[in-house]
Length: 260
Ligand code: MF3
Ligand code: CO
Ligand code: CO
Image (cartoon, rainbow, N blue to C red; front, side, top):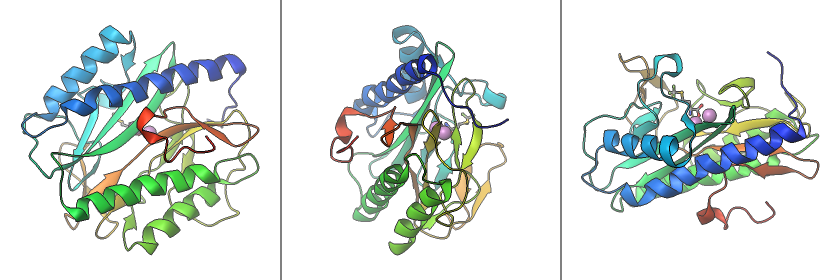
């Protein structure tokens, strides 16, 4: 499949889907507290998406994924399956939300530090969020995907963290995962040249230890090989004539979004 350029009508639908995905993260935040299980968080998000938003949780049954959101705790890098284990103070958790509305996808994730946590976990979380926004700043017509990957990798490695290579951002639209693949590492001046109307995610996974990962026997849960902490933030973007629009922007992100 090649990279699609969205029409004006499709862009409007991508805006709606992106906004709904962002609203799920805003809705769930007060529930992410010590004592709740990730299965309970999944159920709350599921009910909100289906009944309040009249939308579809894209992960549910996607290639056999059994739940409506991904929840990745501590050394889990991505694609964690919500379960009955209770969150405890100091856990570092990513919730990844993808909704389908009117046939189009919005995909976004953020970290939460449960009950306030260690300085180390907070630093990993902050650097990862900044890495996402440094990638977003590169996203404009005429820039290349390698510019985004390079900027993220350079920033992360300067802070002595590592970028996971096995998973990447992706084009998004009618399909959950479309072309292109958006790597979070690379060389400037290489790769696809960005054009207005392209939609894709940037979703760097950053490990506090080495970059290597392994897949748990459940076939989904990706963990750091050295059991170090991992963090991830994700946004869905539209390339505009002027730069880019963050379709999944939340209200609490104004400090990052100046110029967006
Ligand atoms: N939301 C993830 C992404 O950012 C994909 C999750 S696939 C699932 O691409 F099946 F695990 F939900
Ligand atoms: Co994604
Ligand atoms: Co996602």
